[in-house]
Every structure is written in C-alpha cells, then in structure tokens.
View 1: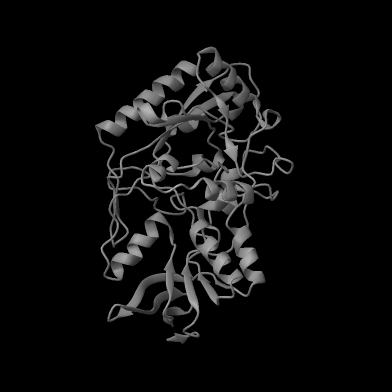
View 2: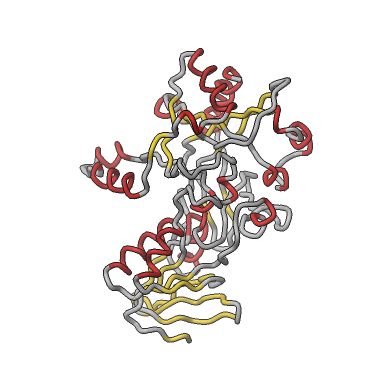
Length: 355
C-alpha cells in the first residue's frame, strides 16, 4: 500500500476531463495526484506516434467485435494531443430543453481556449477547392471553429501527430497550470480498479513500472476516457459500459490529375446543414503516412494514396446511435445498424457529388 495523505484527491487520467478537474481543484488549494497510464512521449512525427497510438503495426489494433476501429492515444494529455483542434458547441439545445442554459459556460470555454473560425488564409489549396465546389452546389460550407492560435500554425497538417509549434490547445496546458499549484503527475500508472468498502472509497489498485500497488485515498475522480473508465468501473463492481457512441466516420477520396497539393490543416471547413436532418457533417480531410501503417487500411487504398499530392478527401462523420458496449475485459461492441449505415451512405453520396 502506498500511503498518501487521505486528504489527497486522486485524478485518474490526464486528458481533457482529468486535466481540467486537476487544474481547477489545485487552484483552490486541494492536494492533487494525477495517475496517467501512459508516458509523456515526444510528439510530431509518425515514428513517435507509434509509441502512443493504439492500433498500429506495433500493436494488435483496437477493433470492436463488429470491426469498427476505435482510435485513441495512451499518453499524458490523452487524445486532446492528437485532435485536429475543432471547437464546436455540443448538446447546447438538448441541455436548454431540460432547463439548463449553458450560454455563459460556452462563452467562458470559448474565451479560455481562444476558439475562433479558421481564417481563409490558413486554408490549404484542397480546402479552398472543396469550398468552391460546395458553394457551387448550394451547400453552406463555412469555416470550422478551432482552438488553434493561427499566428503559430504552420499549416503542416500534422495535428493528429501532436503539434510541435504550440499552436493547438491540449489538456497538457492545464497539466502545466496544475503543476504551479502543487499537483503531482505519476506517469505509467494504469489504474486497474477503485478500492472501496462499505460504500466508501478507499483508494485504487494500480499497475506501476514496479508492479501492482495500492494507493490509499478517500477521494478518487475517474477521467480515464470513454473506453478505459467503464472498464475500471466494471472491475470495481459498478455496472457501466453501455450506450457507447464513437462519432463514426469514413473518408471519401478523389484524384485531381496534374495537381501538386501540399500538406495543409485538416477539417478547416464544415458543412453541418445535414446534421439535424440526416445525422452527419462533411469536412475536408486527408489521411497521412501514419494511417498507411495501420492494419485497417487495405492494400488497394494504400496504393491509391501512394502519391498524396494528387489526392483530395472529404470526411463524413455521423451522429451514430449510442448502441455500443465496453466490456470489463476490454472488448468493445459497436454495431453499425441500418440507420447509421444510411447516414454514412448519404454523406458518401454528397461527398462524391462535391468531388
């Protein structure tokens, strides 16, 4: 048993949820210890990304039983480090219909993260071509709002590898702030279960570099992500893991003969007019070399994308049904039923029309 002061709060996970809680509590004088399963790796290249992405050629791949791939990273900052920086309000209307007005909270978050629409001068050639084609077809294509400091953005298109220019907000920003207020970060500490007795939390069981240990605390905040959190809860005797959704997406590509496209910022624009009526959005996106290393990409597509300077792509991201499950053994069930398949098909047809 590793004995901490029982007044300590253990925060499990250093992604957006865990880092935010740790930062806010540490600013209020609370003693915080953050337990992170991953390391603090270097970022910015495909080779480095192989150390923190799940599901690449160095690992078995994280597929649901239904063959939907679940992408995530195990590292300090979690998946916030590899997002493309999109900052879009979610569930605003749903909360409001239940009497919860989050307008001020949205504004506070947007101000703190400096969320702003992508300027046209930061859009790449592919994006501008797709913007023009979309507008010609009468679609309402608009700049994506992002938590990116565009004065620092190099337009390299490597957001999903981690930004080396410090342009994109990640939860590592909050981890740094929490340090200043006395928080402690323990890397390579994977929490296995929450220890409890008589309906009282007693601490956590943790896999550390030196073996399995127990850390004592009467306050534990689980923020280990959408996959890991329900696994920990189930191993702790709490029913969890149902209603999984994954923002399922596909990419549709076209070839532009004679082009010589350069790397560019992904998802710089968005068509969301079909989100409410048909359940999907469309946005420019290009897969990079890292995607070619994953076991999910068939050889035929790898050959098609061998010269990305001539390829242009659109992502269809759907509002999939929360019909999935995460099991205690880590297996994932995420079926794509007919309703979700129709959303994907409709987005594909619109993408093909634009291309």
